[in-house]
Image (tube, rainbow, N blue to C red; front, top):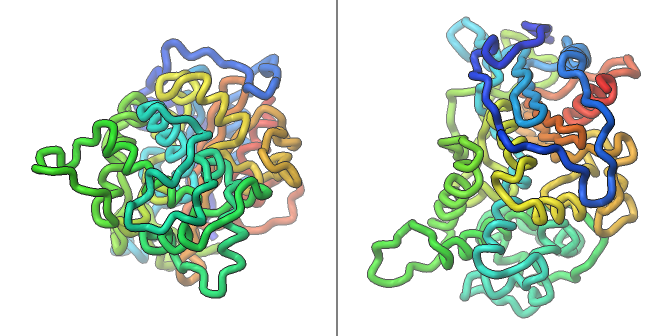
Length: 413
């Protein structure tokens, strides 16, 4: 197992990342569900030290970024991005500016994009989804599904897929066609399912196509959204209307089969271990998973999101209240949502924290784990790991990536 290569607090400049004011007009606000703003902010140095202590000797590589009040305060890392075995005998140290697939953390960006697209098309989360699905699909048994249901995992899709004799094996275009035509029972208990956001990927492409999408704009007649072109529309909208306001450029997905960049490894990996780069095909990019960013970019996005630079405060409050784009049910807590359909209850482990974690599992037990977290004291933190967290016997350390961050935040308050 690889010991952490660095255990230090790093200013943004020291980490090779230019210190950036992420939102000059940033004002930390209480969440819409009545939480009081924390009386004092967590110590960045103590939070960073807690993360390093929890991960020491337990992961192959990690990168951490922390912002407060709209300013990047720490960009730190440990371990390795690539083993010696995968780089001609020379290991590559992890850096907080290296992009990795975000896995399910992508859903938070998809939720934000959906909220903006609803506004552009004079719709709300209560609007029905079926008018914006492909015209060739049979939507007869999907007509009760509203955007709210997909955004909050209360569509019943998980339950419907579980009951299918031959459920889809992926979240591509044809699989979502099968899910839609199979039908569902809405307002079911909240149960997390990638298909909710995979359908949003398809619908968001149509909403952008109807409200200013630039792709194929020179065609003599309207070109319908298809399996081949829909992710181009989604990425175009995210780059222009989500990431550009956050001053982040070039965000996309990692193509399958790529052999360069941060690799993922199994638990207990050494410099003699081989890893792999996780990527996703075009049909599944930028909905439920697939976006690639560094921890520094991801925390910049979170800070701009909280400042109101990307979406309105009212839309952000709605997302917080109903946990749209957040998933505190996993990766470090139950979110207070067990038995609660709309997810209004806050996380009992640490009130005032919202997060979404992401996990990818590959061959030979190679894994990738991510977390994006925002707290009501004006702190945002992101943690990306390129291996599982090895078990230990220390009760003060967490076993999941978001658990590491929430523990660090609690320790630093």
